[in-house]
Image (cartoon, rainbow, N blue to C red):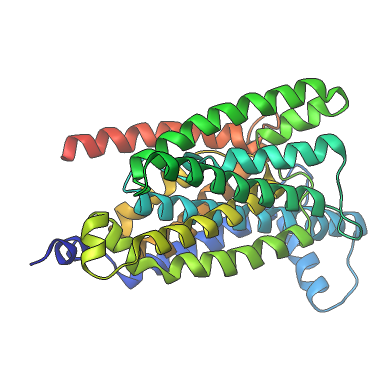
Length: 347
């Protein structure tokens, strides 16, 4: 049996697993939609949703605005960002064959954050597109960061080895973090809002953001899912992938571009949110195994569920409202330590 066949044999896929994940996501979505700081009863929330669906009058216009104008777009954006970041993390871990890899490993997240911070600090916008300036800058800087890192890695190592990319990505992330801190320090008028945004926030989410995130997930996520078989080949080593006919450089470049664009759009909407792309692929791997044909879709579900609960915890279940990135860092950090210790014991 070949190494590639032995790898795929570890698949623990069951249709019941996907059914349970889908049910958990639906229930989590409903809970997050029905619970908020505004005291709106379950019955009234159901009535608002039902009447709005059929164009009927509602009891309270104010509560209708809260449910449909604030909670619904916010929950949709949280769900889509969680799914996207988790998918990107699973793709990066498979591509780089490193359990500590996610979008931030490449410096893409920090590059996108830098572009968004510059846009917000300078007030850069696009005519007719309220948040277009932040989105375009985040995407441009994410893609530019990717090109710069790959260029540096290629100049040092023509084979674009995983170790070279990770090392340069980590150094780049540290440098960009310092630049962002300098910008926030000098942008005195926006210091508070920028500081809060860099820790993750969905406070300004709307249906336009949700539509943008959905389009990005369908396009970029579809590209990533398209190369699930190639990611399985990467898991056994780049040399083995070449031997079974994978164009390593081409596939690596396409996946990295898709990841950078998707992360850039997510960060432009939500700010910097850590640990989703790092931890949730590990949870998904425990559920369905390492086969990326199963792992990538499972990562979508698990990331969305995790970030929805983190958002609910940050805005409702705690006595004070915390940036969602703080919650994901605390919960994700603890979860990753548990996973790491458990994995280490089983080896």
